[in-house]
Image (cartoon, rainbow, N blue to C red; front, side):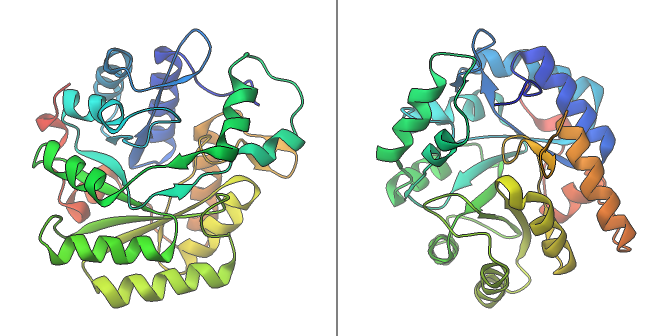
Amino acid sequence: MTPYLPITPQQIADEAVAAAAAGAAIIHLHARSPRDGRPTPAPELFAEFLPAIKSRCDAVLGITTGGGQNMTVQDRLAAAVAFDPEMCSLNMGSMNFGLFPTLSRHKTFTYDWEQPYLEGSRDYIFRNTFADIEHILQTLSEGTRFEFECYDVGHLYSLAHLLDRGLVRPPLFVQMIFGILGGMGADPENLLHMRRVAHSLFGDAIEWSVLAAGRHQMAFATMAGICGANVRVGLEDSIYLGKGRLATSNAEQVTKIRHILEELSFDIATPAEARERLALKGLGEVGF
């Protein structure tokens, strides 16, 4: 839906480095088939861009375990197991994950797989059972920390359950996600409610971050920053820089939100500061 999405390993590496230069302390990474952009969990493709990014910047590199439709938990874990990163994402619950409404706005597609993929989300459950979550926690290296992705308030209680059982340890990096059909809507009241619940459950044991999908991205990130959150932006979540204007890169979105937050007198964390706050093991301890 945009000509600016990085697809090849070289493009992904270049985009990641540019985002880090623009101020991103953490880079959240997916892999795609360089042939047609299809989401893939293949470790051999991650191997083509992870070392390249590491050699060119000091950002924290986080690997997805969310993947895409029709991937098993084992598929989704493959790259994180292979490369022992500082951080990877971990979704906190099963949910409907509806991308199909975009079909009403986009009528032409570059590749044959794209339209069926979107339509398939109408009958797709993004599976993250307690057994799946426990398997991921038990499989990955003790040194890998998590970006706990929470799409609804119940996901915060699931994370609290894991904390009570000693399966996760603070500081917890909680990524609150708004605007995905099947999850929480991008309404200001929801942001404030999630913040209240998170702090009632975890107190000072969390670093919290916010992202919002589509047109909500920048406004919601701005509000979240004012409320004391960290923020995440990028082409995974929105292809726009502003109304009707495509972002030409991830770095362009990072630059915009950084400018907004600095104008509001907030400081932007360096990778070193992020590592300290999240108790990460350091770039020298990864497996790539």
